[in-house]
Image (cartoon, rainbow, N blue to C red):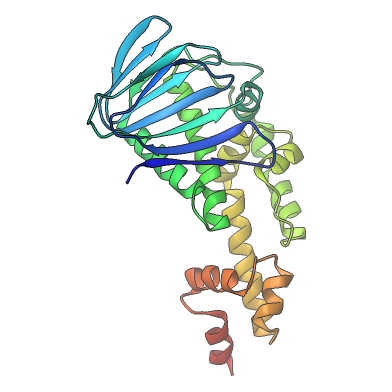
Length: 265
């Protein structure tokens, strides 16, 4: 099955993801205003970039700076599958905690990283909101790995940023129905998205959204013990609906909220 799937991340333009199956396709020479990062999953791509040509087979990551003239594709009749990210220059720089950046290397064969990127893109293109959010977090961390692989130096994590994670936990716990995005959480701490995620995971072992979700399911358990109906529990804790609560409660405790309440009687 061929085709292109595309989605925008966040509320503002500037970060798009795409998943494509385009057998035997080639692109005319063109350029983008954004950074473009692609992972080739299947097919032998021949790339033309600013007067140079190179091959990017399965497992290759390619990176293009804004304004670079690019083109290429695969031979007629050959299957081709890839995922791509399109990021506005200011957004990518802000996500990584930089004023500006430029990729030094156009391609590297990094099959594990390419596979992880493809998995994160699939999550972002899915239907479940929490899975999409987890995909967005994963993409942010992978972007830092890709940037390093392509020759970008990232700023070091400061001791101060590591010490502020407790502040964010208290802020999230104060209103679990409020579900701030990565940009809002990063702004609250004065960190880049990448440094927020890396610091939080290093200190807590979970991403901010994972940590908030486990706290929501834990509080749901307490409210269910107090005989509050599951529909009210879902509303109180900011779940999209009761089925959303059911899915995450069952994943955490192996039983549905209704069965949990019935077992207590």
